[in-house]
Length: 285
Ligand SMILES: [Zn+2]
Image 1 (cartoon, rainbow, N blue to C red):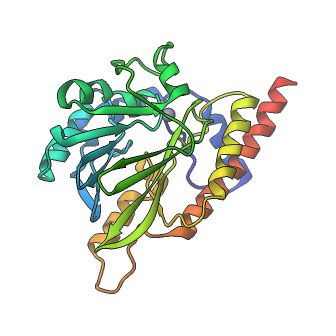
Image 2: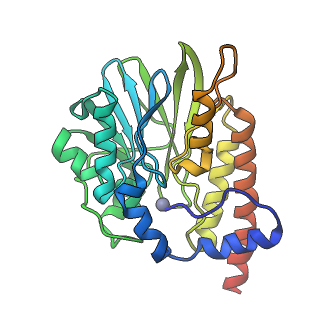
Image 3: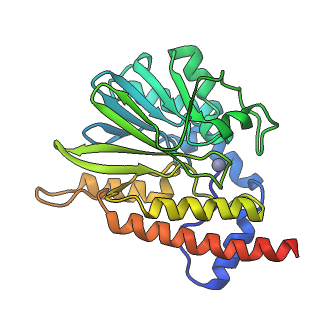
């Protein structure tokens, strides 16, 4: 799950965010989050080869290749219908899903993975530490456990047709958060996109916080990231950017191509994580 971490107005609100972030899911929010009628979003194309097929509060993305589809995250429960319906509404066939990239093993991302295996024969990819999580009691909610498929590690790649994904282990939010770099095309013009697979600070402990900080620092060294593809829409202003995309005039830049905001977001996450580390260290003393 994603904690609320988007804008820091002051140290006071930062403190509020940090204390919120360690709380379990808020009950009254969950019903709206779980309701497909509330959560349904019409799918939309963002780049030549990338489509939004997720819900309001949690994202799923479809990457089209010359040899089939790659799905990032699966939602959960009834919300997985949104993903499947969205793929069909876009005129594509869920049977063409070759790979499902699960960003981390929390129910809101992994919950539909077994269904993707059972109904469409998709191959599910996660990191080893998060496959281990699948065999443990869930942190938030139960979900149908996917069969163990592929385990991907840091700096590995996956090719499907002419499309290449580069994987990074960016632990912290879970022990094996999976982040992915890939190329998106705007009217044929390539841009480097990145999906940070788990930005939320809703976890506990000094060690995990240190892992998170190291992950963010590692991502800060990656050159040339131009597009932030978040696994919760709010973390990358997905819907606001899509509004601007619909109103884009010829010659305007693509609203999702925004390297400065990606850099700023990572810097903001680092500030928040470092504040969390101080809190976590204080709690152990
Ligand atoms: Zn999560």
